[in-house]
Structures are given as C-alpha cells and as structure tokens.
Amino acid sequence: MSRAIIRLDDPTSHGGVVQEGFDNVKLYGKAMAGVGHRGYCPQCQCEFLILAGEETYEYLGRQVAVEGMMTSCGAVLIATQYLAKIAATPKKD
Image (tube, rainbow, N blue to C red; front, side):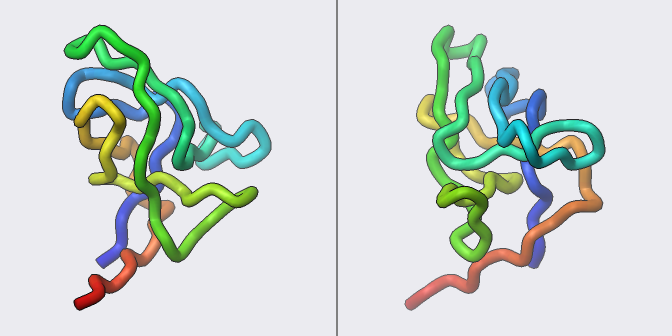
C-alpha cells in the first residue's frame, strides 16, 4: 500500500495545519514535510511536531511524512494531494 506525502499547509485530524517543510523540495508548489517539522493544533492550542514518517524514504536525514502518521499532540496527518506517494514499509513480526 502506498501513502500520500504530506506537504506544508496539509491538515490534521484535529483541524490543525503543517507549518514547516523542506524549503528546497516542492511537491505541486508546496514544501514536502518530514519528521520534526512543526505545525499548529487549534484543538490542543499548541504547536506540534511530526513524530513519524516513512522509514524507507529520507531526505536530509529525516523521514518524509506521509498520510496517517501522528503528531506530538495526537493528531493524524491528512494529505491534500494523492499523486506523490511512497510505498509503505512492510510490518515486522
């Protein structure tokens, strides 16, 4: 299964948005996001960090964020584009 890559301004399940991304990598005009990039959550009224990304794909030493990954406030990332995807890492037993 493939998952869509998260970008700057993509929403979360708490109504928040991703506010950071890699400045030099654009997907359809918006910066691609990765682990450690920040956003804001109106439900929690706090800034969050992207906690998890796709293990099989890194950029500048950071895992790239994909749809379904969690933030530090407990929200789930939601992609707004579905053309750029990464194959999901197989689960280990």
